[in-house]
Length: 291
Image 1: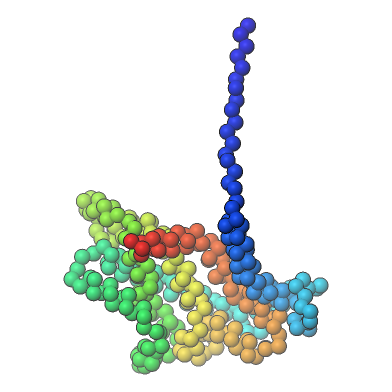
Image 2: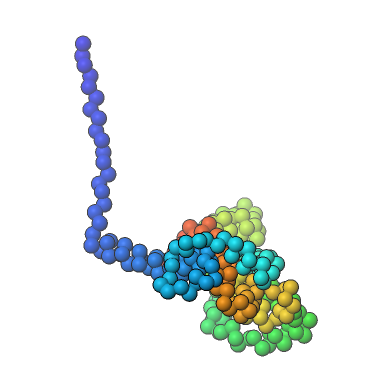
């Protein structure tokens, strides 16, 4: 009998050796992460404390008694959920308007040939250097004459007229996509709008998600425009309500922090679920800008 023996060879992947530079990089990143998370952890700690324990010295990182009722009491004092709904409605509409209009403008500047295209692109980029305060008084006079004062229209409507920053980002991202995709679709008889929606938009998901995150953050946290145009408390955004809460209940920091944690929750969620596309979008835009 012939005995056949099988020789099994196990291949092991070589372990990566950490150099001194990797160790230093890890230490720096850890310190930076702790510095970034420290305010959030402190907010959670204060939100779960009693009012008498907020300013206790030395401070307690882990409260002995957790006051979960602060989240209920803190949101009840300022009609929190109504203003939360107002902010969510405004933020969603502003995000849709800014992203959709900026994609259309960016596609036109990057792919369509028309007289003065480079001039218009230069004007868009140049408008980024103008501070927002330049047009504040003329826009206030315009919206007041239109009867939009004490309404959400001065906040929502301008979002549907494009955003120079987002249009620039989309133009830069389209530079990383070959024009051959457009030409192949045109050979099959596709229109420009069909090429944009069915060919380019699925390929530009990372930069679109980056625009969504930035747009939602800006609309959710905006304070100056609602402060100028909205008078009726029932139309207030959450940023206005939180500002009035701080002024009225300055000593109840535990209640303020509890409400503030719910205030920042939508931003944390949208960045958590979109961070992958966010990093891809910024990385592609940066690589296109260097070319």
